[in-house]
Amino acid sequence: MGEPDPSPSTSQTLISKLDIGDPLYLHPSDSSALTIVSIKLKGTENYSIWSSAMKLALEAKNKYGFITGKCERSTEDHVLASQWDRCNSVVLTWLLNSVSEELFLGQVFSSTASEVWEDLRETYDKVDGSVVYDLFKKINCISQNGSSVADYYYRLTTMWKQFDAMLKLPTCSCKAAKDYNDFSMLIKLMQFLMGLDDIYQPVRTNLLTREVFPSVKVAFAVVSREESHRLSSNGSKGQAQNVAFVSKPSQNVTLLKDVLKS
Image 1: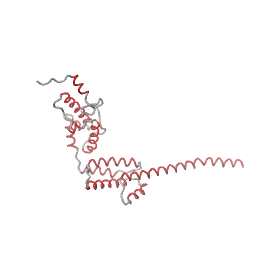
Image 2: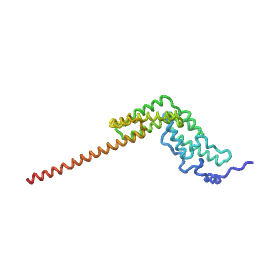
Image 3: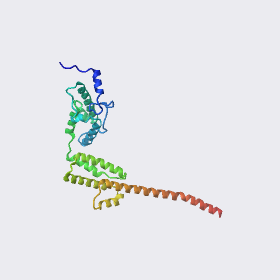
Image 4: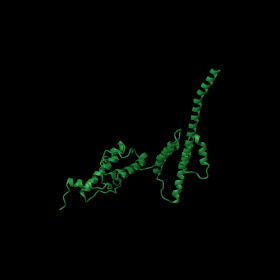
């Protein structure tokens, strides 16, 4: 004869003893109405960004195991099984809260968070030539266009990270992977230099005529220093003009006094 299910009070006691590091632990703020990422999944075009953001958010809340299947439902402990059901429902709603309305309607009847995650991955984690082409074209169309160097560089790095995540660049330490990543960095350097405003032509020429090309980060630092120098020089000129403008009235007053004395 099996043991009776624990009473509600006993269950609450057991759940309250869960360590904060346990995946089954739920913080009071972990409600089903919570939106844990700011971006909504639309489809193939933003799946890589959405999935990366969602992984980070779920890892921060110690709930990543619910979408990978690593955190399994207990088959022996009724209390922990019920708590798993509750956590699974919370994670499931977090996923549903972060997808577009069209995708929501297709997943709302799912029962587990891992099922939804896997279905979305199989459906939208696809990269074809047109997606790569569109993103690469956007990157090559970005230009400084009068904005600050930092703002221009930030817009580029955002697109580069998206592009790298889409292509899944090799991370091993073999020579082929190093050569490929070096080539990728060279392309990024060229893209950064091409989009700079024409006032940085001398700096661009200097960087391109070096025996060894700098990294894009070094190039950004060099151009940023040139920008600071230009802003400082323009500020000094403006102050000098203001001083000259202010001094003229005093000169006129002195001249007027000399005329009156005569």
